[in-house]
Image (cartoon, rainbow, N blue to C red; front, side):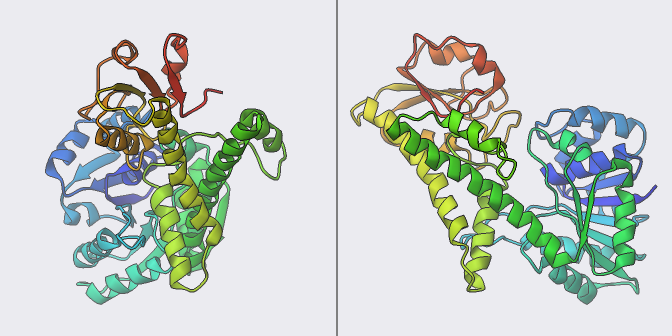
Length: 400
């Protein structure tokens, strides 16, 4: 088995480290936040992800999973170093590579032996080349470094399942031999492998997310048309989804996509298109349609109250951008809360996992019993058990 270091203990880094330890490798995860590392060492996950904490505890006890704030400690015996730091969206729409560049410098300054650097972070095409050049320019020892692209394709809320039962593992390497070493690392998962060069691997990740985001925006626009023409969009989605060329996944109408991936990745690939004079007009339209879906939903609520919600209590069920996660990044709920409160409404919200917003209340009944209208924003399974017949409900999501 392989000694591995993982830079970053966010969603991607932590899941990656835990799963690699579960399939038998020895993994040390690095984070500069000392309190977070103490929490991780205690077997407590800072993110809500089904099954993750149990695997953490199991592999910590088996001495296969470790956490540290010190790069030198993590890199000491590492044969591979995974980069899994964030690439947030910058003001221009491009990916901010600040953390990526720092990770490359940290590797260069601390490694003492030959190593393969595996880039798990979602990065623009050409970033693996940049990482390789930064490392080589800053090396403190006479060692060989190979950089490989290995993008992740995990769904938040299903990351553990997706890791063990995924559709494919993409490995982008400039050397066949190095690519083979990385492929062997993942061999216990027994998943299909796509081998390509680094730039193609980087593009696969962006292209996949942009396609899925576009599919969501497409069905939402079809839903808007169905509503005006008396058609049932769920039947339409089922009907077109049975076509194997289309498929039913990501054809669930609602408030649009959110979270940490689709918003920033669609903006990033659209930026790349503009930068290289090859505009991705379909993706750009999907981005606009996604935001418009929230505006249309808000307008329905305002229309019901004759454009005056001042002093009115509005209930919200669900804050996370999707069920089975505590992630509220780019969540539709945040837009709706901001717009309603700007107009003078009092928002009371309940989410089974998200509890830290000032609008949060303890139970669903706290929402149902006090609100003049209910906005169903996240389709948590427990909400399907409630009788909403006595409430005015705006269905932002459907239960299928």
